[in-house]
Length: 82
Image 1 (tube, rainbow, N blue to C red):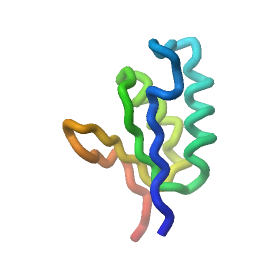
Image 2 (cartoon, helix red, strand yellow):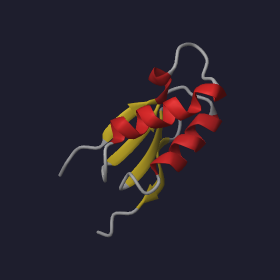
Image 3 (tube, rainbow, N blue to C red):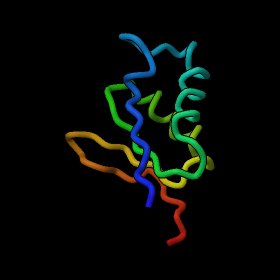
């Protein structure tokens, strides 16, 4: 089994995420996620960025999990048929 790829969204930008850079954030995340992998999103980031990244990874990632020190793991989607 291949380990999930963990992506810290806070590493995509300096200090403040910008809506104008959203296409770049989405592309960086897709490049990091690869194709058909299990992906875990972490890091301090605005909710709009989490939502758009989740949307961008739908159909690309096998599963997507949000990981927080407060909530633990929250499954956003899981398209693994097993």
